[in-house]
Amino acid sequence: MQLLETNHLTKGFLSKKAVNGITLQIEKGKVYGLLGPNGSGKTTLMKMVAGLLHPSSGDIQIDGKPIGAETKKITAYMSTENFIYGYMSIKTVGKFFKDFYEDFRPQEFEKLIDYMELEMNMKVASLSTGMASKLKIAATLSRNSKLFMLDEPLNGIDLVAREKILNAIVEKANWDNTIIISSHLVDQMEKILDDVIFIKDGEVVLKGSAEVVREQRGKSIVDLYKEVYTSC
Image 1: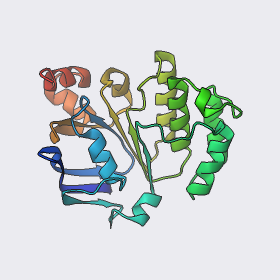
Image 2 (image 1 turned 180 degrees about the vertical axis):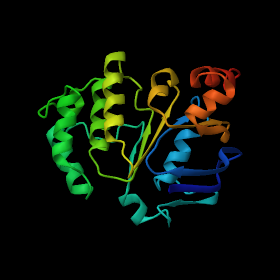
Image 3 (image 1 turned 120 degrees about the vertical axis):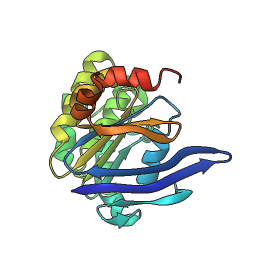
């Protein structure tokens, strides 16, 4: 069953089209990899789905509804920007999310904070880049949303912590939600992806089941990534 659909979606900034006519059908119960180097259009696409940017043309539907207040209630988007105030403690972050999002689960947040080896009394301003990233991921995954979008969740994360984050994402995935992960760290991500979407210059150049794509092309997703983006 489709959860997210985009039709001829375009977003232009001055003379440049960051997203150029993208049509996608995203199903429930899958983990999608939105793959491409920086500047390929991944973040712009996610921000339009999250309702933070308005398309220049085309349309988006989530769970059969156009982007608006109802779709925002069921969409959890983690941006690359630091959207958590530095003066807060991690415990305060949990309270803030609980007040702001009806689907936030405080007990799940506490478990994820412990799993990420963080502490509730830590101040956000004192966190390293990697620790701050783990906090953002824990807060986002503590919602009970239908659509999760994680923009470059492994950025600034060491190899050991990346494994924890990938495990947390897999644990969150179920048949009633969809997780879309944008990344250029494909070697780390490949093992958890059900489907892949390759974006280049704002256009989808390859998409499909990760398993089928590997079989048809006779290559790993990592090798296909290198082939598609070798000139980028």
